[in-house]
Length: 310
Image (cartoon, rainbow, N blue to C red):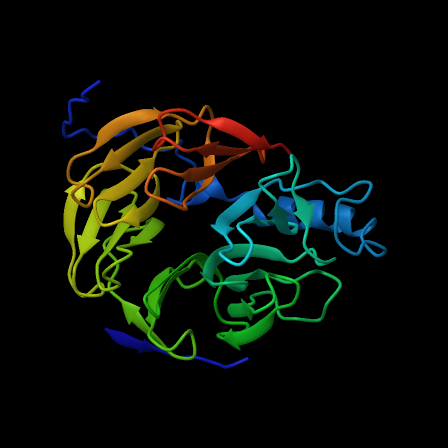
């Protein structure tokens, strides 16, 4: 483990199966990310109309499209949606998500670390003078404001996971997996078993993690020191309990594992290409499709209902 340089700021038959990989687009995470030039152009167009917005969904607001991450805030039970053009909040008693504040920050990595406490990363609102890479940032007011924590200008986390005071992140700018035991103040670099697609952490053992790579699923039980390949499946991950690991592939087929990914049981289809997945309970999941549609399942992924459209 290397220390990273930081800067503050009926009965279902279960069987082993190899899920088809997501649609290939070069890099293992390219199926989740649009080209930077196109993304910046979209942001600039949107910013022309942004100056007078103070939250909600104003005229011309694109809504939660190009979703990067999802998380449920335990403070109010709302689903937060991290996107290329800002953070949105979906009250589950309502139909549409609303913008949080007036920032058009490109929030790439996103994770909920406690009531109204979030960690994020990505790229700044173009109206600010911040460096292009935000490193690790933190919000203690449910996304209304953000402050730098570390690696400002040095890291672009596309994946963030917080469990049991450990924070894991995949920094796409350096193609490295990092772990922090002090809420992101300092980091250590882990050996990674391949090109990273997603990371999941056992909710009861923060030293045990499964990563999805371009070569399948790999498990570590020693905080990423050593890895073993457990399945050829490739996809997004959600791990709500030690006995329930969910995997959704690029075609939208969702499976569940009760043994850390070794054996996968097909559950259902999300009906599209996934952009983000989160489990907020053993059987309750939310998924964002690439068109920004948010769907919810309360039966472990067998059936899905649309909760919000962009």
